[in-house]
Amino acid sequence: MTRFMRLLVRASAPAAAAWLLSAGFASAEALASWHDTNSRRAIESFVTTVTTPGADFVPPAERIAVFDNDGTLWTEQPIYTEFAFSLARAAEMAKADPQLLAKPGFKAAASGDPKQIAALSEKDLLKVVVATHANVTTEEFAQAAKTWLAQARHPRFHRAYDTAVYQPMLELISYLREHDFNVFIVSGGDADFMRTFAERTYGVPPDQVIGSSSTTQFDQRNGRWVLVRQPQMSIDDKAAKPSNIGLHIGARPIFAAGNSDGDLQMLQYTTSGPGRRMGLIVHHDDAQREYAYDRASKIGTLDKALDEAARSGWTVVSMKGDWKTVFPAAVATPRAP
Image (cartoon, rainbow, N blue to C red; front, side, top):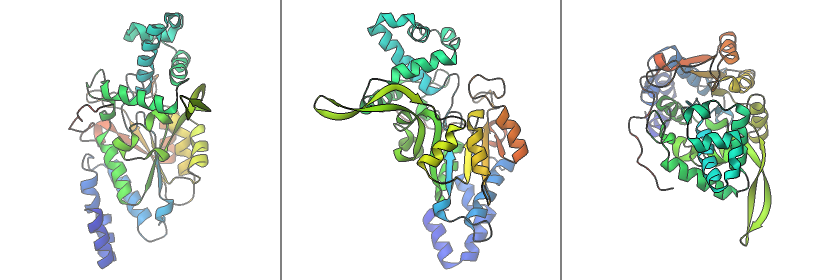
């Protein structure tokens, strides 16, 4: 059912409209890539409950939904997409300045050897991220990210990274919007990096993207006043997520979706408020169509949050059992950077 038709039905027959929504007619089209399982029914039940007049009704202004990005909206294996971008920039920087090869991260990036890259510690990877994200203007950084995203391809799926997104989650975002939810991304990725594709890919505008961030310096370059990214970063992960939600949104969400222990506190914060709320975890258990990993994985570790989901009644979405498909069928053609 289109948004126009739903409004028309509500205007002419509120009781009939409520019945249609509760029966799932509106969501059948919106959640087309979801099997008719408990996970889908939990989503539909939650949305119907908070949008139907009654004890658990939530006014549209308070219908805030927050989504992690890496592993929740797009693939994060075999390495975080932003890490792949950073390693590509590191290789370019090492080519221009061979002295950088003395640093493990730059040496691995320049080699292009997946084994060397996989052997890097998280500390070394973060050093690469900080170094490759600094000493450029915010506009220069955004352009570099756009150029890379337009050219780079996922090593396994051979599609642009910003098309290696989860079709069922795109449908979920659209479904929530159709029911007057305000959707935000709250992720550990760099906010400026995510803002280069979030609106085109998810329909989430730049001002509704919350992520890690570099400090900036106001400076004049080539006669223009600009913001120059500095080599200090604030990481939006774990307990920092609810803090940044409070800082940037100013209200507690009623819906949160994540996939790892890095999202645990965001889910706890969201579901601890009064009234009907929903926490959702994407569980990667489909090695054939994507990847299978949780407690033992170095990337996207899902351990404590999985245990908390059982205690708190969060919905754990099985990629293998709940989704008819993983990625969009049509791959976007390469875009000009």
